Figure 1: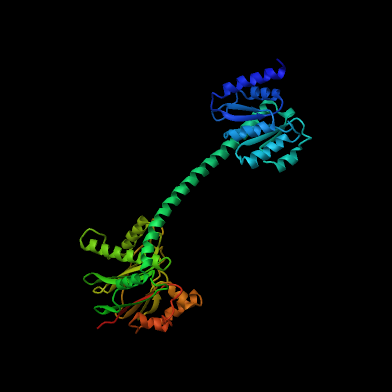
Figure 2: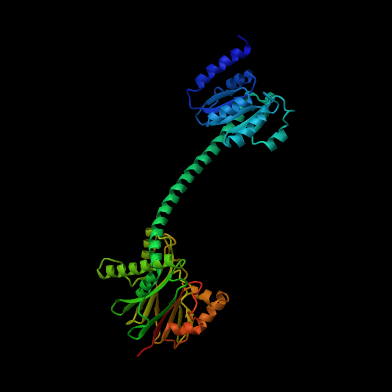
Length: 432
């Protein structure tokens, strides 16, 4: 038996022992059997992260590529350059990275003929982890190189694992969202089949305009951009001497947003019934009502948020208690002191899990006008926000008795559908 045969027999025995463990898999690629033996002996007692090494051998570039096509968990390749050809090792690198698509395995190039593959050119051209001359690789330097390569491999595979888990979660979440979207789509398709009937239903849900509660009169004007509207207004008595009113603007417009306005009407009706029955939150607390609505929208997963201003008018105590849920422009109050905004910065409902809403209580003058509008009015007026807000402020007069009077002053004729839903709500108080 020749020296090479004895070395190959030793490698076979070494391989059988290595297969019994769960060590880091290291592939030695070299056409010199002695390099395999020396490498295994030098690294036989090396451990990294409580794991030893498990060795594989290939004696040519072609054999290495075939082996790597079968074995998916090789952590490190100790690769010779010159084997069956002068650039066999370099060909292996390209095949591993490009044909096999394996960008995780670490590759340490070992060469006994550095002139055939200059280090600078190889490092710049090929995706390798390290470049070593065989003459400089002492046992200690080899161990250091292997450990640094395994550390890089572990980091890369951990990132890959996390990416796979993230992709799986994204797929699962996407499938869940698609199921929810499909449910909503079916609901919207049913609405679209009877859009015009839906418009009649939606507009029947609107309150009478104008409508008086003692010396206070509410009126509204709603001009949808499509057949159905994402804006909504309502006002109704909740207790003797108390009237709740609101203006709401659902994100988007059309059928999908109109669906949410119907949901909003149902939510407030149910809340009113629960309060009257003694087992629901008080409706005379606008901030609490907004928090409750926010939770409902998030829980239902409707996928829409609502800018809404809610007020409670005390017709006996002559006060207004209100809370703003992201509604803009801010309401305008016109009384003996002039016209001013009821500015209150806040977040639309259905957008964040824990928004902050608070009540403001305002004493009312004997004679006042309160104007609420949706933001579609600013786009309809045009000329930029500052110009539109100034014009809106000037349009409110102390003798206005209806939302239509304000709309006419702003030039809202209603012959053509606006680019966004436009809504006005006017509360006028004139003592008898």
